[in-house]
Length: 242
Image 1: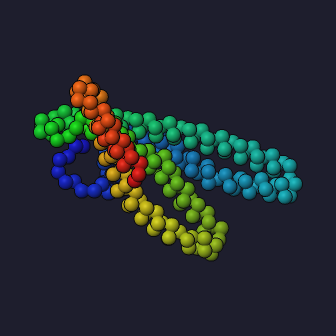
Image 2: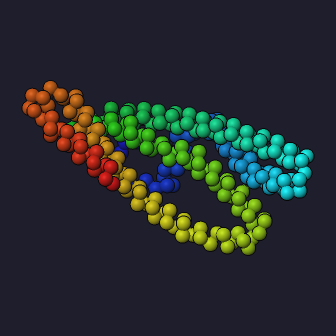
Image 3: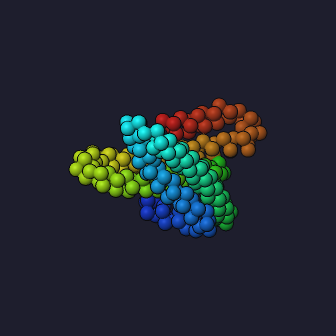
């Protein structure tokens, strides 16, 4: 986890590879989350069809069909709600377990470093890496399991339904998809660098606060309160100005 060499930038493929390795010990929970995700997506794709039946029964004033369609719609909505709650619970549990595993490995790696390593790195920066940075590292994994895969299933199912209904209208509707995807990719590359700078500034702020509080007697002895406050304020302002 802790590397002193130049490992290069973390690409999506590299992140996915490492994420899958950390998920392996919790494959039972991952399978359960995937099942909930697939069933939830399938139910959500089925809901518009039920809404169409409800509108048709209203137009034709068919009370029996309306009652049956409403019952089916309510049951499907309840089913999707239960699946969504179950999926969210499992994903949060996996995220906490993965974060705990990473923190243990990171702390173990830090403890076994040479003394020179601790001379070059401040205590606050190291503790910030163990706490804040690990949370930021695990967050994309939660998003991947909770949102990205779910939306991917919805997109595939939605595309099938759209082209099954009218391929001409579908092609016309998706003409604006290319620019949106391109813009999103450009923004993702830009935000990755900005987020890295923000985390670095937050680590500096945490380091300043930790060093000042742990050495408060020395700070008071030399009347360095104002200097420490300025250093902490600068790091925080730099992080929020990005």
